[in-house]
Each structure stands twice: as structure tokens, then as C-alpha cells.
Image (spheres, rainbow, N blue to C red):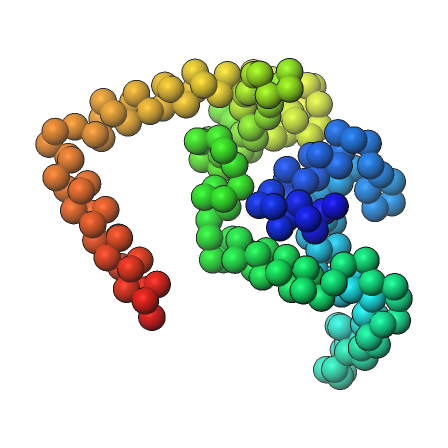
Length: 191
């Protein structure tokens, strides 16, 4: 299910949230987190391959045994998922560009504790909001911040950008910057 989730375009946080909402027990009967899910998606054991000694202190190559277990996923699926995860890696692509449908994901911080705000849906997606990550993970007593309606907060930010940045005086320079970036991306893509 998790391999198919990645192949369908879901990001790890969506998959972990779905597993936790369905009360699927995570490793050690704890909640699912992105790192444990990433560990599963990049572990060859699910292809039926046993690997020992990946972190040998003597620098020896790992011992690999193909077909040591019944495969849960094919090598083709495993490689496609591994490739997709590599393409989304923060070193290659800023996580904000792929991980969220929320405009301000990864950009806004809590005014009380300084941690990032996470985005959440409520009432089956009817409502959405930004919340302090500390408060979200540790509970209401961890931070006195409030929940911010996502549409209102995003609208406020967009209006400020329009008023301060997207002015008639700035537009020619912004267009020039966008053209330069598109040209640079085109050259990089063609290489």
C-alpha cells in the first residue's frame, strides 16, 4: 500500500497521516513518522533480498542474498519508488515545492516558540488551518499559539505581496528575473 501510495504521487507525510488515521500500528507500535516510512521504502528486504553489513567498520562490502524471503514488492516497483524519493530529496528539490498543497508550508513560523507551522485539514477537508508544530506534536499545553485559518492567512499574505511587491514599478524587473530563471532551467534541462 505504501509503495503504491508513492507511485500514485503521494508524499510521505500524506501516507503517514493516512496510516495513523486508520490506526495502522507503526514500528514498535508507535505512530508512523516520515523517517520510519522512508526506511521501509528504501529497505531491500521488501524485495526479498537480505543485506548484512551495510555499515561495516572495516569498510567491507555488504553481504547480499537475493530471494532470501518472499518478495512483497517487485524490484521494478522498488526501483521506481527509490528513484521518485531521490528526485524529491531536499538536496535536489526544496520540500515546499512538492510536499504540500498549502501555499505557506515551510515558510511560516510560530510567533511564540519559533517552530514552523504545519498545515492540517479538519472535518474531512472542509476546513484547513495552520498550527504550531510544537503544539501539534506535544499537545495544547506545549505552546500558547492559536490555529490560523489557512484561507484567511494565505489571503492576507497574498494581499500584502500584491501591495508591496507586485507593483507597476516592480513588474518589469520581476518579469526579467522570471525569464532569466526559465532560460537557466531550460539550459540545465537540455544538458
